Image (cartoon, rainbow, N blue to C red; front, side):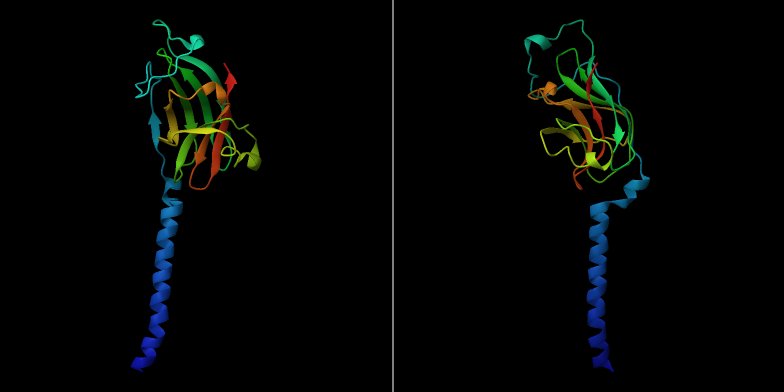
Length: 185
């Protein structure tokens, strides 16, 4: 009886270990608890952004002391993989630096969400889910919260005029949660 018990328990122990490892990996990879967690971030529009690299200043973008933040382009977020809404603005600050501002953002939380400035066209429906990594894009950092209004600094060596859209991008699954086409203000 003891020998039969050993023969039967070995595959059972291995199966249990495989299932536990699989569940652990699945929880790490998909992070399903984020579906029920919302992170709201409410940031004011800054007057000046402190960046480590000075912004590239071109004659047409020379800052003036009296100038405040100026919206250069904007667009409304459309849903892709997850329901997403809000407004995106490309803003030039008084010092000549640029930010991408998300206002009234409302999207699902996800495991590895980023804000991307891209040159891809925004397409409706599933056709737009995977286009943003096909061309040029700049990651402006991790999404600070899936709800609210927040600012993302455009690096000083990036010319924002070369980009036409913004995507809330899930880097883990290579899919857009939502995106906005930027139209001149």
